Image (cartoon, helix red, strand yellow):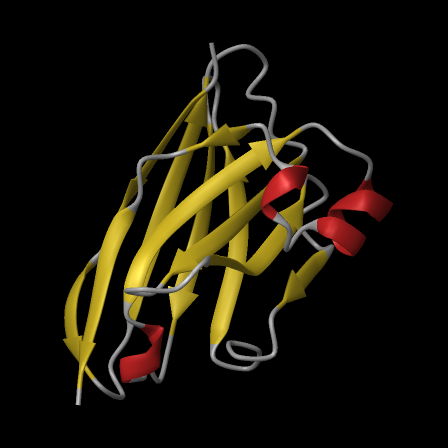
Length: 131
């Protein structure tokens, strides 16, 4: 069974930084494509970044491009995806979820921002940015 666990959320002032982590474990990790989604209060969940297993193929939503960096590392029993968030803004506030699925690189880059692309989800970690 695939398991995704997020960590690293918290409260920070505008202009600050946070790094979120998502550890994927379970049957072969099912994590060719991994992504971060964000759900702001009262809004739908939106994709903000995705990364393919080659660690260099990435996509970013315009709202975070240039401020956020996505990466992934491998260990013996798990793969960890990180989201380094810089110059945080109050509109970055929300619950951050990681997602994963085994899909081809082209689909990861083309559809990595869509919820329906992914089969596996974490429980989320809260990020709050105050002005």
